[in-house]
Length: 203
Image 1 (cartoon, rainbow, N blue to C red):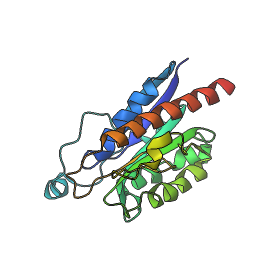
Image 2 (image 1 turned 60 degrees about the horizontal axis):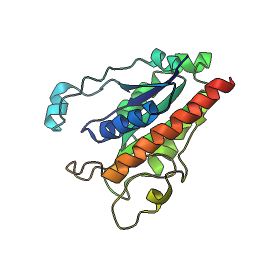
Image 3 (image 1 turned 120 degrees about the vertical axis):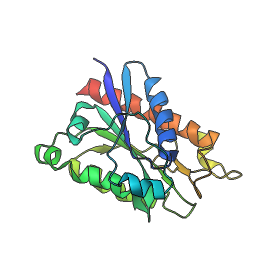
Image 4 (image 1 turned 45 degrees about the vertical axis):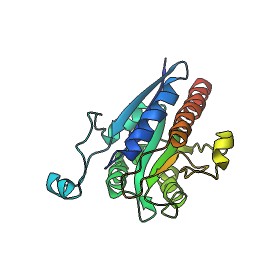
């Protein structure tokens, strides 16, 4: 049976979604792994989103909390808001109480990726504070560490991402994920999927 990896994310302006797409490609490159993209529900009204100049959502399906239990591994992505995950993703996690009561996510591997507005805007605090969600569910956090190699030590170019997971800088919204950031996202997907596959085989 294939190992199911769900990449679950919230993206207002598309930066996190671009990382998610690369993570899916990386995960799908591992033999025996089925990777699928999911969005969490939007909490803002259409009127507010228009005022914020947010583009229309993509056709990626919206996930319900109960569907998380179907996955063998989960990679969560979100933009930052004052150094923590965006409220839309937090609202989704707040709705997973039923899974917590029955411990349906316990023992599942989980990864994190993210987008921030600036270099001091939460590249480490965003994933660090998100780990509490995983801990309460008994999930196994899978960081990428320094497995991305030389790309982790890039000093000449602006690059998001940390040992916690892939990341990007959105700036004022006009900056898009760089080639190196996308490569790191692909690496995270591939690295995570290989671990999820091993854990499933050992279960």
